[in-house]
Length: 430
Image (cartoon, rainbow, N blue to C red):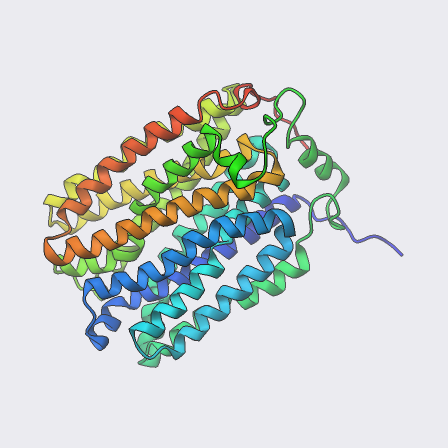
């Protein structure tokens, strides 16, 4: 029996699957955010009521990431992602049956629990399938799916809502996208060590590029206690805890913010896309710049930190938006902030694969995701409270200052965390 023909550059097809899952992931979660103005009017919800919906998702998403990371390291990426995508796709579709605030909260909780495995699973897959010289690009590819999904969702959701005249079919149709993805993933994905369609040259390239004798990660316990005893883990966790709320402020509240400024959502869809498209570009800027610096013989961590510092200052540009009402200027400032956030986030998501062995990557990524989720829950509650009682002005100012603290912490706590990543590696070629 002849063996199946190898697929050239199969690792990038795997990266494409991770990108697609992230796009679908974000369409599912953004469906509620885009429909928020309609649902608020129909159900007479306040901003604080809407915050409860967002927090229901965030609680499950935050607590689920740490558990999902451990589970993925035990089950493997294939089984773990099959389970998680099936879960959140069904949860998204079931939202079509919601009858009030409590049932919406329940379905958002279930959606968050399922989606919590996406980033730990994708990060683990990148660590297994890509050499470190390409990990920045690979993380940028799958993480850019969040911006693409967030950019697609407004037009898709508004079109579906207008076509059906009801919000219920919208949740049913957007949720079904994940079920289609499962068919492709199940057929194509296997670990690189045993993939029947992976060429021998590419397999050697992948396995040799994971680690080498002079840059292997420092030995450490893979338990939560052992991981949390290390400075570098806290650097990654605290960095994401402080910066992810900036991104989720834009994804969860941007439509409501524009309406509060007097703009009609239907007339501002092009502007609504701009911050998410800028984030998409930012993902590849961060991944591309760090990979370029590594190929120019920069130490791996130095290349990652350079991008983090540069983009930490870029996120500080939201403060002027607090005092402007010009639509073009507001969109430009939000776009610059999300561009910087995406590049910054790409580096933070890549660091676990730089600092830890593949068997621990999902666990560390999950812990950082839990920290990010808890930070986002707190910020979501505060955003709803402040927006109802004051305005969005203090929120924008805080969203400019906090990322600077995150930049300082992640650069300080991951410095000299491993001799391995202080030495540049010679790029390999398949």
